[in-house]
Image 1 (cartoon, one colour):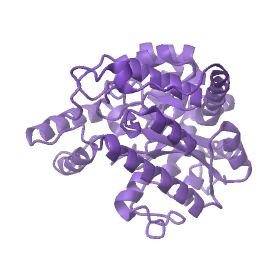
Image 2 (cartoon, helix red, strand yellow):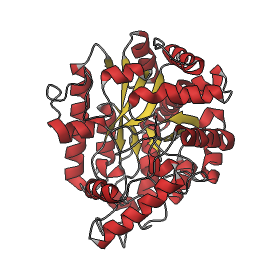
Image 3 (cartoon, rainbow, N blue to C red):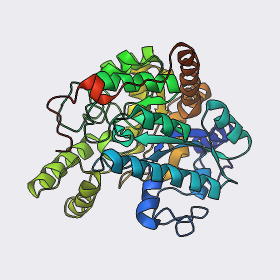
Amino acid sequence: MAAMPGDPPPLRHARSLLAEAPLIDGHNDLLWEARLQAGYDFAALDIAGRVATTRTDLPRLAEGGVGGQFWSVFVPGTLQAEAAVVATLEQVDAAHHMIATYADRLALARTAEEVQDATAAGRIASLLGAEGGHSIGCSLGVLRLLHVLGVRYLTLTHNENVPWADSATDVPAVGGLTAFGREVVREMNRLGMVVDLSHVAPTTMRAALATSEAPVIFSHSSARAVCDSPRNVPDDVLAALRDNGGVCMVTFVPEFLSPAAAQWRLEAATAAEEVGVDPKDWVAFSTFAAAYAERRPKPPATIEQVVAHVEHVRDVAGIDAVGIGGDYDGTDTFPVGLEDVSGYPRLVAALVERGWSDADLRRLVRDNTLRVLRDVEAVARDAQQRRSPSRHTWAELDGGRAGWTGRR
């Protein structure tokens, strides 16, 4: 990754470090944008060149020093049961199509070794993560098939509860994880699929940490002590993450970084509810929030605020527990200086200026994530020797779960 003319020394150093240790980012929603903008037609939305309508394309990924990307195979929680499963499979298909279309620069990665192989070949390791337990339709069989198709993490919820897990942004329904929810976590451990706790309620975080034999991640969350958003991670959970060996991948969403932007989000949610828009409905609320921002602009976030979250996670959970999950193309605004995927070197440069060592920067941008992948794979190898695929069902373990009514 070449230095650019006029780069100050910290930025030159950051680019050099990322050339040697290309960043692995935990969450990017380009595939949903490809669905909305082009129906997954990468001739119409050609990311080989600069794309004006997205935050992500191949030239800017190269400029950003990105060597690995978890592509989110996201579908909104407004889709449930079979509809959610079908839409998720369409996202997975689109991911494989994108990777094949740009095979000179992208490579499917299902293991830590395949990530390293992609880097050695000069390509961006492309991992898949399913964002929300609704994507499995309460079926461990669907979970297993997603793993066969290359999905390597499952976020247990999105904005809405699922029948077996509570979301951070919904009314508590099951108190964290049900018996079936714990079985989902155990089956993910057996498969070698990473448990992702972004979006889930603190009760769900704690229950998953108590259940999982393998390290977990937060693919795109920040620190609740720095910004009091329900989407962020409380300190007691960060402390438990240290013991679990997991990673919190700090995100760039302003509402999760800046207290002022978080307050704006609360006010926008209240205004949405007043006109009948559910703030949990990601598609509808995104449209509403864009119009609301024209009347009342969202306060900006800064690189310094990202640094504050990164350093808080490091201080509470340890240097081995911090990573980056930008959430590009998953929200409307980003911190000044981090407006698109080319901006990662500016964050690394800010940490260089604060005295971070190269060894710690490598942990942040790459090594911690690779270690989690290796550890999850090791747990799976052991678990597969001890137990067969689970045949339990939601109906069997949760008995239909009295009080669950599905979509509210």
